[in-house]
Length: 94
Image (cartoon, rainbow, N blue to C red; front, side, top):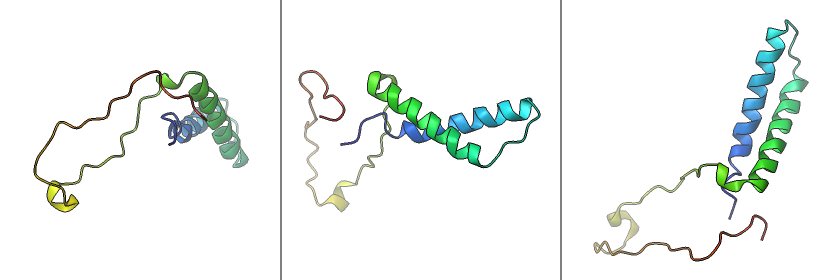
């Protein structure tokens, strides 16, 4: 299972690229193509560190798409089954 903060690594890299691009243009300098990769890696590393230290800071991406009952082959009884987590959350990497 991937951690909640893992998809945010991509977003952090894109935010760093945008901020660096704006700062470079503000200083009237030329933004080189190698800087895209450098800024993306810097943003990804920063978000990775923050995700390990403060994982509750990031909202969860919900990629689950509900499947209609007729397509899933299940019964039409909508029971009260739900997931229940008991105890502290698991640490990343364990």
